[in-house]
Amino acid sequence: MSTLASSRRAAPRAGGFTLFEMMVTMLIFLLLAAAVFGLMIGVLQGSSTLQDNQNHRDEVSSLNAFLKKKLAELPANSTFFSYRRGDGEGLTQNGVIWGEDAMATAIDAKLQSNGLYTLRLASITPKDVSGPAAPLDTTLQTLVTEDNTSLNWTPLIRDVKQVNWKFEDADTSQWVDLWNNNSVKPNLVEFSMQVAGDLQPSTMDFWLPRITPVTLTIAAPTTNNPPSTNAP
Image (cartoon, one colour):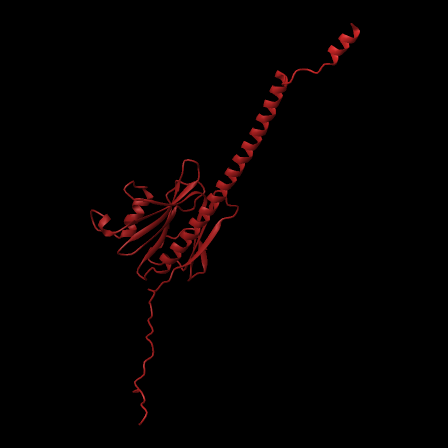
């Protein structure tokens, strides 16, 4: 009898897992899956942030090229000034307006619901103005400062943290924060903006010529001497 009992105690158990072992295995699997999922989410978020930052840098670069071209081509009889609407905390001015007889354009910082700004652009031509004739830049200034909904705005850059314009007068060599002189353009314009996610603001400098740029065309040199011929 003792030998039979000993053999029964020494007999191996049947194959398979207990309920406890299955629960432990499932718990380990779930923990590993959660870790892998969290790692993937982090990688995707990091990639999205990098792409957004690159898109913002491209937008800033395009804006810089656009302003440099437009401001450098302003004719002598054009106007340039800044304005303040008062709907942005910490903004010395909301934007600038430049214009001539054919068109007036505004670059404006509009406050978003999240406390950041959207940099946007609007232009008007004589056919957009009804009523008594008035200078286009003055008309656009009225529409912009009133934030008139009739203006067709084109968003340029969203989620901007900081916007600042500065202007230098060549006669005094002094920088000012507001330029209200419609009859004289500043010599230099400095535009600074910081997009959300950037550690440092981007600064752009533009030269505004006070004379109309003239394109010179240099003709190729010509000669009046007849071609030489060799005698037979």
